[in-house]
Length: 476
Image (cartoon, rainbow, N blue to C red; front, side, top):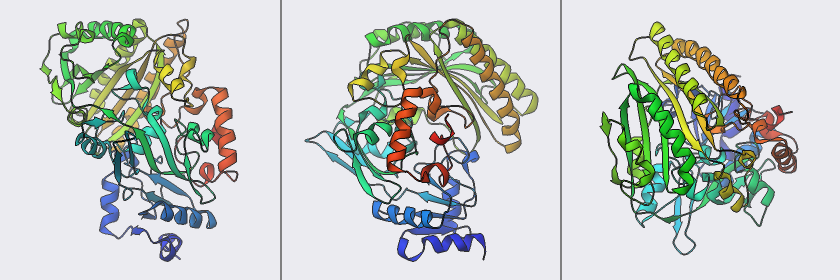
């Protein structure tokens, strides 16, 4: 029997979901809808459940057949195998797309099939929003289960800290509700623990009033990189004095400009124009400046990253130290020259991203009951750093991957050479598959998560049959 036919038998009939095989037009459309070409693996079939009950039936059948599977929400992860699987079964949750806002409790519940665009547009009808993704086309599930850094982190904590309840299908097929009163350990483990515990079929988050934000994108010539580093470092030191302000600094090679430029995304979430928090940045010359009052959703369109590229992402976090940031900028400049020597100028994009990571961010997490990311161990303000490439072909990706990996290691080693310079924490949503993300949460959190996994998945279904992502079973 052909492998596709054998897998079809697992899901037709009793499983009731919409099945897509390789010869179906919708199958190819599903593959094409992945953000990164790197993730466009070809499963034997794709199954699209329409309810949590169907998810449970699908999971039961796959376990019974000892069949490998992957779980897809928005399909935005840049890694191969995280949300898709070659020759296995991909469970596509895109039809779990309901959104329900409760004004009295100020909460919103939504399925893993929606993207942040849909959540923001629905809540915007009532003048509300949530601390969700900064790019509106990103799916909700991956961001929330990986932690989630938002424009509101300084005021509200990480996105996962704003989840008040999960509906999840666990390995024995049970559909359970996890919150701070019921299945409380699982509730906490899901806040950063990714796909190690089950399939989340509904999220419920705190919502809060937000009519307009002030924000936008600025572009500055590369001659001012050192000024931008200094200003980003200064912003990180004082950001908790302005918890409604947020900044992302991005040294990026832009094909249209054929050069590196300094990009920045600036947001003041209360809608305060020209906040003192951005006074220093305002002195930089601008090639482009889109800052103005706008909706949360409109801001999310400006940080949109173009799809259909082969992606390489690596990340580390380190002390807020201008020396480390300068070394990272130097490394990025070398990366750009390497890419120019191998590819046409319009075949690649690079990013060298600095995001403030003040120690005070973790206080919100603790106040919300805690997550498993372990950021409270950071004794000083830090920087969340990402180095990435987005290229047009698989051959270019192979070349770029080796370069980015070597350069991130150079920055890591330099940071480690400075007292307290390198942090253990590695942000899951930016990490490469070779990075020890879960170990970076700290031994205590790893032990806790393994205990939760043992309770809800004693036969390690989500370690073995669902191999994609960052797995507890691979952490010593």
